[in-house]
Length: 101
Image (cartoon, rainbow, N blue to C red; front, top):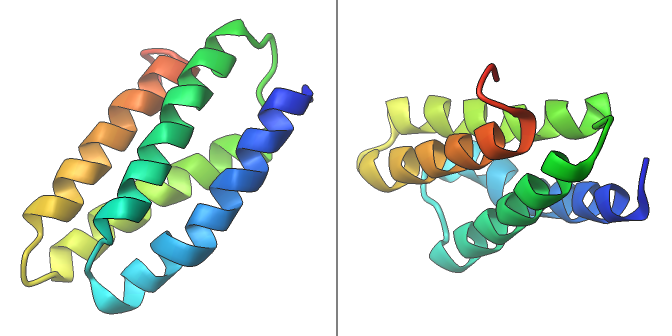
């Protein structure tokens, strides 16, 4: 794994810990943390398009983010911000992993 992908995976894991896991309980996204998540997603899109191999753990973590947001939105009082973030994240994943995601 390249250093660039290792760094992205480390930062994504931090965002999962500070944003996505609390989302499961609170059903509320913190806008500044969503911006951090999307910045990581854009970097992943650029690095993923150049990489010949993307680690399974990185793919799994990024899909966990997507599915957790969709699930949280089902139970949230205001699901729209969560769904908007989830679909933005999904678009970034398609850029990183290809259209057959």
